[in-house]
Length: 144
Image (cartoon, rainbow, N blue to C red; front, side):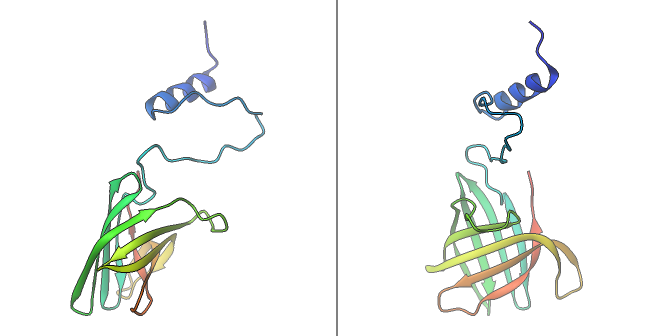
């Protein structure tokens, strides 16, 4: 049996990604991109701003180790990607969790950003921690 090239490619992609075969929907219906099990939209991120720096690394299944250095202190903790917020643009990635035992939200946005040293990066970052000033900066987002 000879398969059409597009269907064959879709089946192969599903097998390689550990997914099931494509669902039967109309050809005009959009198919939103999905991440395979355990993949995060943030495999790694490094960035910061004046006087602070953040490093994030995926540990699998939406979890991330994170370290924020600011004001001579380092806050380490775990952040989790809970999915795309319904009303957020597709360029925004939100991670929630704790840094230094304080609730934290890290927002990474895929957009051009120029840091304090005049270096152009492909992402901006905003860190909000309870009891801390909100921090904004730029960084580098690794991609799969």
